[in-house]
Amino acid sequence: MTDLPISSDLLAEKNKAEEAALANDYASLGEQLDRRGIDIDVITRKVAAFTVAVPSWGVGTGGTRFARFAGPGEPRGIFEKLDDCAVINQLTRATPNVSLHNPWDKADVRELKAKADSLGLGFDAMNSNTFSDAKDQKHSYKFGSLSHTDAAVRQQAIEHNIETIEIGKALGSKALTVWIGDGSNFPGQSNFTGAFERYLGAMKSVYAALPDDWRVFTEHKLYEPAFYSTVVQDWGTNYMIAQELGPKAFCLVDLGHHAPNVNIEMIVARLIQFEKLAGFHFNDSKYGDDDLDAGSINPFQLFLVFNELVDAEYRKAKGFTPAYMIDQSHNVTDPIESLMTSAIEILRAYTQALLVDRPVLAGYQESNDVLMANQSLKRAFTTDVGPILAKARLAKGGAIDPVGVYRAAGYRAKVTAERPSSGGSSSGIV
Image (cartoon, rainbow, N blue to C red):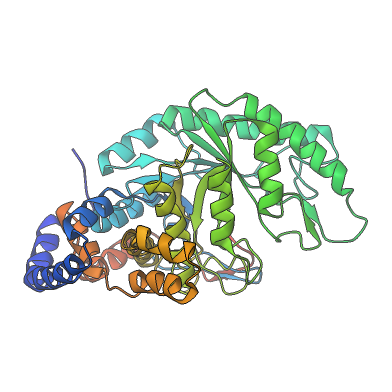
């Protein structure tokens, strides 16, 4: 029995008011797609089956290097975070799993599992944290963790990752995501080769602790917190790590962790081709790692990424089992609204990619018809697939208009009254 946070009567009332208009829009789009040889109901069923995980930390208010301004009704711990995550899934019906962060979300695993079950939620990949120091931690990660020059610090980081695996096993997770902030800010501060060798050695110890049915996702990041160099700085280094570790190691692609103008969709294609794509942390970026809402800056790039994913899906690419998760920092918006709209934009890009006429596109590519190859992608991208998304949500018991229902329910005002404010502003990202 699930204990959903939004009134089912309100949801039904709001959907009823929108259903007639949706039916007309859906029928009109269906006629248009039928002329292109596409069965709208087949596409809708595929969209309804697609899910993306939400990050537990995403329902809180983020910050920048300079300041963090607390938001109203912020969750005070993992159990309130799960309540907020349940709202997102109840209204979008696309986010049934939550990705936890150790030690931020540490709690009794039996209570965590029971709470998630009561809300109809499951658990996605576990995230370790060796990029900041936890309370009462013996050794500091100021100068690195898995690549630290001190073997004791490296061992502490290894043990933390193994602890994260153990927590995940108890919760039903099947993957560990490892991102480190290790790097350098000054030339000469670090020996590049030595740091990478130490990292590989430490990660091999973590890898050895993985259960047989688990995977480890290593994440690259161009810069930050170290700006001169980072140990895992790009997808090439990430691929080398996955190759070195073994068949359970894969490369995670965060859309914000790339230099401007980098062709992310080509990186995705390469990792698929060589069977090392772990999956994604979806967000958007103006410069790099801004953690903006997915699809808010460059929806066409998101579509192009999904074009590669759908292509791999259709040709049944070997080893293609990507994990999808949102990873965002919400500084000036309601986090629940941002995560709902981000989930919808991710589904939008997936749906648009399903509309690409792949045999026609392949023909244009073979004949080097550059303009028409590009236009075949643009035709899919410019199609308004909103009725498909809404129909898929409605079929699963979600909201035709998730943000509208959320605002009508007054959920933010309700939790603001129940959760004391964490204060005004503070320095640093959380």
